[in-house]
Image 1 (cartoon, one colour):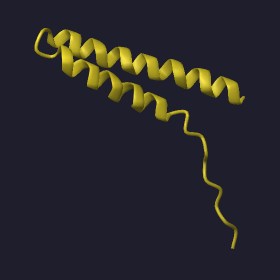
Image 2: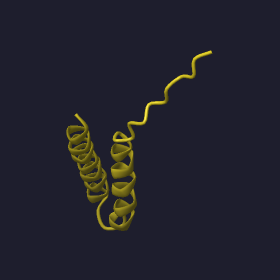
Image 3: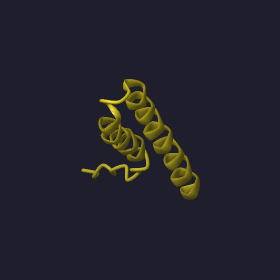
Image 4: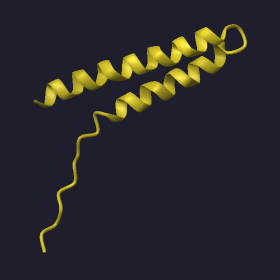
Length: 60
């Protein structure tokens, strides 16, 4: 039987990692402003997307 090849591309993990980082930072701002909480999550998501683009560009 042929062994299935695993996909070793973990560049998309940066999106989830950036979102979790934004979530963690957002909890510090939650008491002061709920919009800062949402903004930090969006900033983390954007950072993760930028990192994913840079990592996948280097592989291709």
